[in-house]
Image (cartoon, rainbow, N blue to C red; front, side):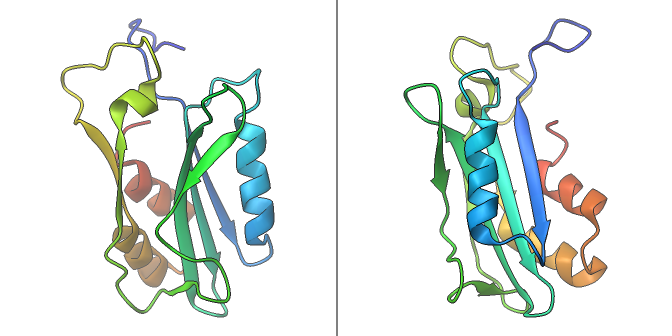
Length: 144
């Protein structure tokens, strides 16, 4: 897909699940985004348990065969998920080649990676309770 000026743009899905949707559903949703008939390149998943003050962040990319997802994370799901009260020091560096996809030129003005700072997400959760608009701003840092 292309922007109105014919520049390519990344195909990213950001999914934020709060409270009632479990981690299995979040991963199942990610699998559906990477169907054979979709153009999604990157999925960013955020799961928040407000009552337990816990969270999880991961990202996924299209599997080598063209359909399906490979999920990447350095954080654990329950029962060992991370507290929103403690820094986790995890930053995911997603290569722009993964974000744009094969054969799509990456604009020279882009950074080499799309950086997802889990502590920035954690701080937004703490400050806002969970403001989806603020969270999305932090997650994609203006790349969409």
